[in-house]
Each structure stands twice: as C-alpha cells, then as structure tokens.
Length: 100
Image (cartoon, rainbow, N blue to C red; front, side, top):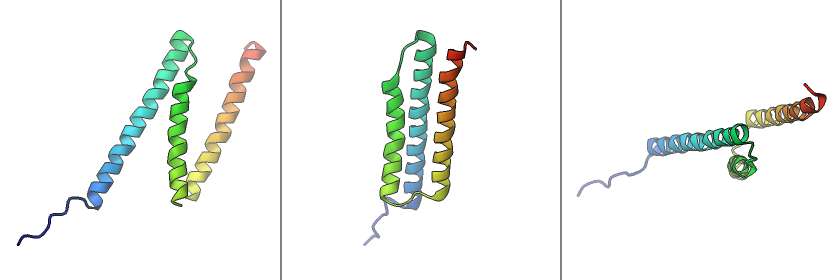
C-alpha cells in the first residue's frame, strides 16, 4: 500500500497567496492607470473604475478585520494615507480657485 500523496502544503498556500497579491496589484494599478489616462486624455470622470479599486481594498481590510489579523502598523499606515490624501485633495481643490 502506498502512502497518500499530499496535494497542498504550506508552500503551495504561500505561492497561491503571492499569486493573488500580484494579480491584485496588477488589477488595481491597471485600473488606476486607465482612470488617469481617461482623465488626462479625454477629460472623462472615471469614478466607477476608481470605486472598484477602493472597494477591493475595503473588502480586503474587512475580511482581515473580521478574522482579527490587522496589526498596528497597518492601521497607522491607513491613517497616514487618509490624512495625506485629504491634504492633497484640499490642495488640488484650492489651487485652481486661486488662479495658480
């Protein structure tokens, strides 16, 4: 009698998760590039595509939060990112009104 073969181990899971990470990065940054191109080249508002990128991040954070795997550094990075984004949006909104 032969021993049963193991189809999945920690390495397989690790490689799969790395593949998911790369596909998520390609998808997210690809959508951001399309949004930027449409905005600058055609003057189109692509809020629907931008919302998909944001929704992907929210789903990921929600899943990790539900399973209690979020850590302090991640929360600090999120807060810093949100503050910087708010400041950048304020400046981007304020500059055209000043005629600069």
